Amino acid sequence: MTGLAGGTMDRIRAQRKVDMVKVLAFDTFGTVTDWHSGVSAALYRLFPDIDGSELALDWRRTYGPALAEVEAGARPWTLLDDLHREALERLLHDRGVVNATADQINSAVHAWHTIPGWPEAAEGLRRLKRRYTVCALSNGNVALLTEMAKLNDFAWDFIGGADLWRHYKPASEVYLGIADLMRVEPHEVLMVATHASDLEAARSCGLRTAYVERPREWGTQHKDEPVNPLDDYHVTGMDDLATQLGC
Amino acid sequence: MTGLAGGTMDRIRAQRKVDMVKVLAFDTFGTVTDWHSGVSAALYRLFPDIDGSELALDWRRTYGPALAEVEAGARPWTLLDDLHREALERLLHDRGVVNATADQINSAVHAWHTIPGWPEAAEGLRRLKRRYTVCALSNGNVALLTEMAKLNDFAWDFIGGADLWRHYKPASEVYLGIADLMRVEPHEVLMVATHASDLEAARSCGLRTAYVERPREWGTQHKDEPVNPLDDYHVTGMDDLATQLGC
Image (cartoon, rainbow over all chains, first blue to last red; front, side):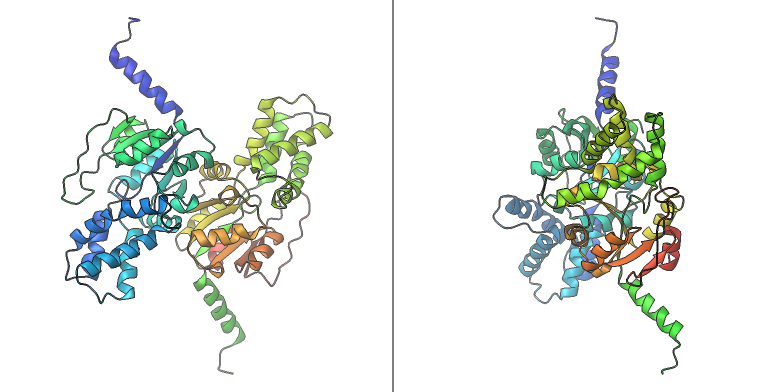
């Protein structure tokens, strides 16, 4: 023993990790924004006769399979807005809503552009931006993410939408793509998300990872959020991430 | 005559133009930043024995031909940073500077990342951002432009670097590319630049145009800046643009 206690070594190791990270890449839906509240509210307003919360949950469940279909090459590149539209039309039909107007559908699809940030997100990003380059890295498209950022005052340094690469996470093109655009090595990027699968894919590309607890992502439904020792950080929000990163 | 005087008609026409524009796309080198001051200062510091201002001017003159060579397909896609490096090495050699270190070259190339904004630029962009989506649309690469924005507090909504499209202006892919990413029609984008050739190419793609006077772009060298009636706006800076656009 050199006289350094275990806690000191942990702090030194943590400091080294922090020192190498230059770019923070954030998942958006669920991680910095509360899609369930935002989309539910729009659906309750647009379709008063059906359960907007339940429809929002079912709509979100179509997301992974739809993106995977595009990534598998089963269909050509399709923007998230268009995937959202198809899924909603199907879900409404299944619920017996057959007379939805184009305006109603457009407004519901657009609700994904205007979902509110989690309360601490905008200010946390602002703190982090002082020391790091903060980027959205999302399966949303650039226009959607730009609108979301303006409404929520997210001060992104750069918006990495899936349409830049025409690939959806967890495809490696997205994680390696942001490192390439920022002219850094993959291990200099910290992927921040509330979804283990996103972080696992990022790690497999050499990125560092931070898990964000968002227990209310699915409304009142329980969400399992165990600490994964493979993540470099496990935080309770953007404010906690800023504090843990010394911002 | 309907009783509307010519001045009133002009105002109505101008208002209609404003109403259709949603996205402002800004050239950066010269238009929002003062490359001559920034690069000259770095060169004087790095190479005290040579005329930094003259070298900066000559360096900038290599820019158009180098980009055109890439666009013509005479060489594969090459980042602006790398084109800058090659040109500088050649220019130094021509001046008899044969012992420049890698650090000196790197620092000089990096000076293009850190050039200062024109005095009114950051605040003007902030005013414009309230009503419009403000994007950089530059032949710089994303990482360069991100660093430039952080240093100058440019609150871009989105950074359109040439590496997103692997094309250099005046290639149509860049002008149409930003409209596509923003999900708007070309005529809903206003290209803002201090270079007539940039605006001419933008117009040929259907974009609207605003010329920004920057009489000191080339230091003390005279720059011709006639009003071109084909431009939708002719302004003296970002503050004037904000005022003319009613922000």
